[in-house]
Amino acid sequence: MKEVISAKTVWQAPELQANAQRREREFDVSQLFVYASGLVILFYVLSALAPQWVAPYEPTLMMTDKILSSPSSTHWFGTDYFGRDVFSLIVYGSRDSLFIGVASVLVGGLFGGALGAFSGYIGGIVDTILMRFIDIVMTIPGILLALAIAAALGPHLFNIILAVAISAIPGYARVMRGQIMSIKSRPFITASRSIGTPHRTIILRHVLPHSWSPLLVMATIGLGSSILIGSGLSFLGLGIIKEIPDWGALLSQGRGYLTVAWWICTFPGLAITLFVLSVNLIGDKLRDMLDPKTSRGR
Image (cartoon, rainbow, N blue to C red; front, top):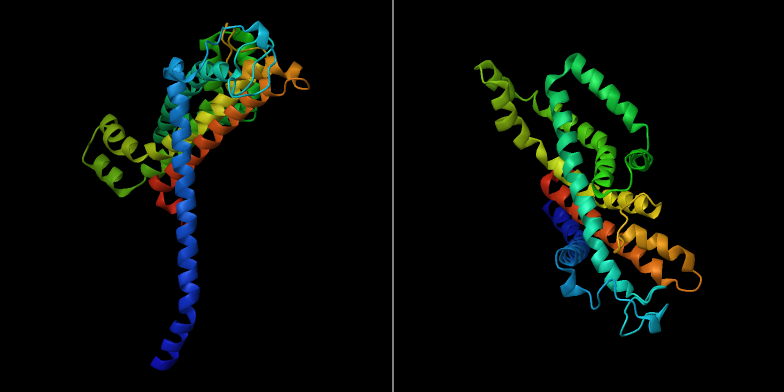
């Protein structure tokens, strides 16, 4: 029997080693993508906080002798129909785009998380009424709900943030409610109630610290979705009306020149795509770190 087991182990050794090497390569590749995504996000944050350090030109500088110039060593992303440097416009436009995304995630996550936590902990008829209302709201696509709110309130920065945040609240509320309902039935919560611990103390010290991780992952991934919705509103003319356009407005302004100057709207679209992809990769890695049950063996 020992000889058979030994022979079988020797026969499987190369296959096991190959599997281990393949897993190691997959791990290295995934880590490489995560590090690259982190660098991309840092670049965007630097562009938003200190655009003058990144942009080679002022966004309002009109070089009339270089109107619709194609990408070159002096203008990496070319120039637009006013002779403005497209790369500089993207760098300066990241400020409003990122602010809309971050602010709407914070507002939507706080209000949605609080609503879901309240509904899940209270339960009963209150939970039923709130969740049925959330179900009704969730039947409306997020971009359509944000579009209706933005059209009703008007094109203003805080109106756009409010519109994007409201469209995200139902998702955060659903996730938080499910997490709270799972935690409140655990033995240590029951024990705290049995000794007369106030509900406020139970929520703040026992329930919330064990339920924030899924909300954090959802907020990380939701940052990309919020920027997409905000850019979509700007593309449709419901965004911020400013001298320096954001990414969505750049797309809208360049679509009329797509056949003669493809770079005007192509590079802002790539900027949005790259940021959303980077945020999703970071969120996916964060999910695996905070919840080992969802790890896929990387």
